[in-house]
Image 1 (cartoon, rainbow, N blue to C red):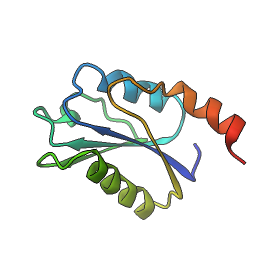
Image 2 (image 1 turned 45 degrees about the vertical axis):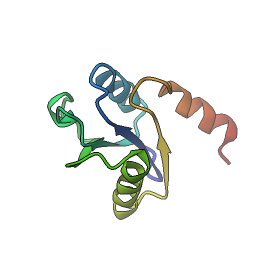
Image 3 (image 1 turned 180 degrees about the vertical axis):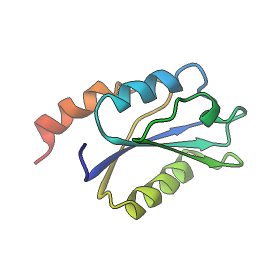
Image 4 (image 1 turned 90 degrees about the vertical axis):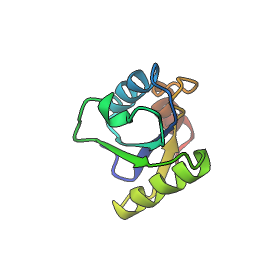
Length: 106
């Protein structure tokens, strides 16, 4: 597991895609923080537990920016220096994370 980087996935009512995105992200061997931004159905009921997965929840929708800030603070508290954000709607392909880190990260 890369101990400097956590993947953050903010989500709001992405019921059809969140599980696939999270499962693909977990395959990358990073710590994943999902921030449920007040979804109608709690995301924690949709995802399987995993030691590399933390699910946080805003009781009410606060917007993507606040969701990322909440997850960023948690990542920092856990000792991560960097975060990578992925959209929960499947817009970003988790497999691209390592590809981009390999070619761009120094």
